Length: 601
Image 1 (tube, rainbow, N blue to C red):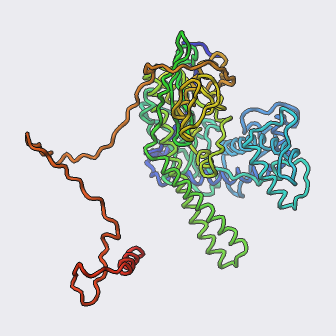
Image 2: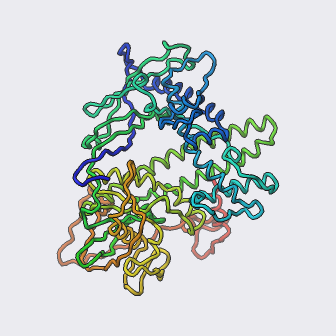
Image 3: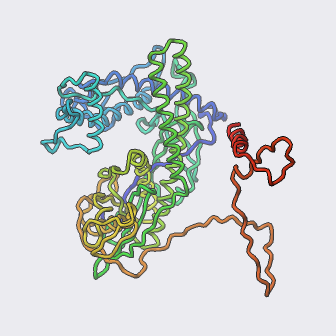
């Protein structure tokens, strides 16, 4: 429990890139291309060892040990992954003749145990769902115990896996299955989490906005001894928006290679004001909209009850949502095309299979490039939304920003394309960006239940009607309504104000309100919400001075003609012997042939 007026630590992440590298022993400058090659050698060693360890441990006994949380002697497993792996006797193997420091082995085992611990929950869920699965109907029977409950979306995904397995086995009934029976070992990511090691592998210093990371990198693709591991100092710049933060600790980063080179995924701990949900009387609700990323509205608590002007703020994504939809469709098309070529290559002759493999590699590279573009746009959308909503709340004097609980939010009923598009939106990244931005101005972000926010009236809690279509909402009893996203944002803000005394605080997470209470929200004529700034992009030619109209002279307004189409600009071929007289009728076939020839050339 936190006390108002005190500060609490809060962790966040950011990314940066080194701009210089120096050999720690000799002090000579190193090129960034050389650093990228040496980091790739390190990631190849870590990735190969991690994949081999996960594949070797892909058996039910591994998940039984992780679920029990006990080692062979009955002692509780430590939290750190490399210590738990040492207790259980799980050690990676490397190629013969390759020397790898023990601290790099810590990184390998820590990442592998983290992946297996995450999949232990899925193993228990698959074991429970397989016992309730009927292969004849492809349905799951209702759970009988409280421990058998899993989210509906997760249950549908497992049901699809079990249906595919039953189809491969000709519908034969199966016993209780494990995750090792349903899916293959997961693919490991090419990264190095330096936080799992100590100062013998890497250390970090930050001063005057510059971060210096000292890390031990191999000098050979297959290092044969300790002499082929040398320390390198990587110098990077801290982003300017972090210079004003009250940062108390800088953590070791994670090394990642992308298309631009080495990327440092860093983490830091800052000191922020303890969340006090009872200090303010105004709350901002943010609804995740299928049309745009988010919409916001304000509710204020007064002596006579809750009031709102029902004038919401809709986030303007500046056309980035359309780009995301286009890139998503392009990525899905590339995935389907690569999958079809893989099916053809499975039964093709060797010479044809080689050609198909080359095409599949090209498609995979294009799909990876599309994913990189989508990640950049999602990050830009998330932080832009966080800044817009934070400014909106700061101007209104709100102390709380209420968002929908993503664990209970599921996109359904909007069609296959829209459901997939909304499910792949950057909501989780937007929540993190909003919490990070709001913490800088002392505003607390809380999560509230999402069920019924778009369907219930904030005044009488009855079901809303849709007289103007899906995007409109109206309550005939309370005579309130408008945009359904704005109405949902009012409901979210109302739930945050009514349930703030029962909020659950967990370390590393935003406060959560699980119980919903109702109190009528009265529509007031006073404008309680600020007017967000709307930049207008108008193209004006300032090089040519505007002509001053003469006094007393009526200026005639000249309206330009509409732009002609291709059929108006194509001149038909003149018949032989005709000199262009208007009395000669033109042949529509000639115009069509000319237009077709221009279109397909």
